[in-house]
Structures are given as structure tokens and as C-alpha cells.
Figure 1 (cartoon, one colour):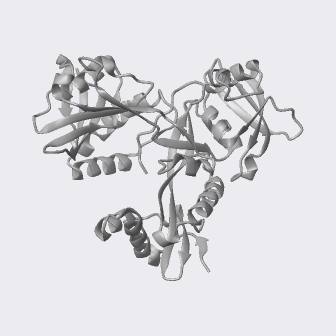
Figure 2 (tube, rainbow, N blue to C red):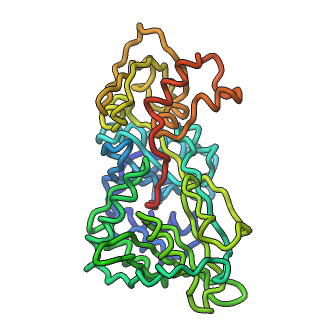
Figure 3 (cartoon, rainbow, N blue to C red):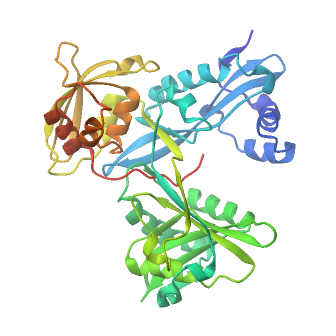
Length: 394
């Protein structure tokens, strides 16, 4: 009989075989994916002689509302082709929610192959992103601030990279904290994939950074893709785009991925660049009480609201939660006798908690019926502070 449990050391090769079957990447790449696998962060459906399905729960810390909390990053979800339809992945997703709560996670995030599939288990889509695609150098304004850009010297510059990242990420909800080891691994992977990292400096001060990934382009040359960047002033943005405008001719096209809340049209000569609107990731609240206690709130955000939450994968979240916020802190108390001001699914609450949902606007479009306008306004006053963004992949 198949069993659900943590993967074991002698089953890592089976995990590599599963990755190869699921993602068609070859055994050499698959074994690379399983190198240094944290066994305590994995669960699997194990059949005789193989790992049939697999989920990894990576440990992160993120900032939401300025407060730090533990986040479980779901990754490596895979199932053998002949096991599709047996419900293995679904069982693992439900079990992962329980295990993440047990180890102290407040929230969880993932990059879905199907938003609807993971939505069944409580994850909600958010973090709208715009990809400015297929520009060429002459489409971009050549700002003189490009002279502020210099090549990153690798691990020697980690402190400067992190300082810029911490300033930039503080303006968003959901961004992960990065250790020196995390930065070193990111730089190593970028270099291995023909990419480069650049710092933006003026008079000795670091204004930001950006990573240039280089992917093969058709019919020849490369596409420069900028996904991971932190620009903390208009000068920094002008420096980054000015630099991109002078890339050599073997760069056939340039794409920049940015949060939708940060429009970048001003750095192109005309707003005629192909634009792709994407919902790249999903978040969910794992433990309501823990998440509200760890979250930060704007100092002028005050109020008390009772929300009835339904969570089919986390029964500990079910019921009426009295949430009170003042002086930048919050508390959630379960009170089944309280009269709820609003009722919602864990998906809806997760969007509200992350600041990703404009409750009054959606109500006017008919998406949140039977909730008083005063309650909707209070939800926004308490939770809608920063846009949602995430650049770490797992």
C-alpha cells in the first residue's frame, strides 16, 4: 500500500527519477535538483520501489505589513505519469498545510501550474505582474545615469545587494528575506545560466541592483530577461534602463518583469512595447491566529472586525475570528459565539490579509455580496497597505 511520509535518504534517487518523468529534464539535471535535499522539508507518496508523488515545503521568512513571519514555499510538486488521477498530489497538498502549521509557518506560497487546481486547497492568486516583452535597444531611452552601473563582484558585494533589496522589498507584502547563503546561491545559479549581476552606485551609495538573465533567442542571439531587481530611486531606474539600451547587438531582445503596481512605461521611448499581464504566484494563510499576530499594520490602521472563515484543508482556521488592530499590531481570537461582520473562504481571506484585494471596489462589481459597505471600508483600512510581490522561486 502507498504511504504518505517524509522522504528518506535511500529514496533520493527515486525522487530524481520522478522529476525526470514529470518534467522531462534528463537524469543529470534531475539529480542536480535533488542535491542537498532537505529531507525534513519533503513529503511523498511512496510505493514499493519508487516515489510516486512528491512535495517540497521550503522554509522562508517573509515580510507582510512590515512584520516578519515564517512562510512555507511549496515547490517540486511532481507525480509519475501513470499515477495521475489517483489523488496523490491532492493528499500531499492537504498534508502539507497541516505540517507547515505544525512547524510554525504562518503563510505559504507557490508558483502554480494550474491556479484552479491549487485554489482547491486554499491558495489564492495574487501579485499581478507586467512583462514588458521583446523590446530592442532602440526602444529604450538611453539615460546618462547608465554610468552608475557596475559589474557585481560576486560574494564580495552581497552586503550591498542585500541592503538595496531590503529597502526595495519593504514597499511590498510577501517578499522573502535573503541570507548570505541565499545570495551566494542566486549569484552562482545566475552565472551558470549565462547571466550577470549589476550594481547601481552613485558617490559610493548603492541605489539598487539588477540581474540580467540571457536566454537563447530565435533565429540567433540572446534575450536579456530582467526579473530580479531593486531600484530605490528614479535615478536607479534610469540607470538600469539606460544600461539596457546600450547592450551589445548579440542581445536580440530585452524583457523586463515588474509588479503591475510599478508602471515602467516612462523608460521606453513610446508605450508600444508588447505587454504580458501575468499572475505568477499564489499565497494562502496557513494559521489565521499566527499570521495576524506576526503581521505588521500601518500605525493609523485601527479597528475591530469579526470574520467567519471556511477552510476545507485547515480546520483550525474554521469559525468566527475577532480581529483587532491598533498601534501597528494585530490580534485574532476565535469566538464561535460572535456575530460575523463578513463570511468568506480562506482564499478570500488570504487575499485580504496580503493586501491584494480592494474589498469595496469588488463589492461594487458584485463579487462580495451581503457585506455592508462600512465593513468593506474597514477591511481596506486594516489590511490594504502594500502591493504583493515575490521574486524568489522555489
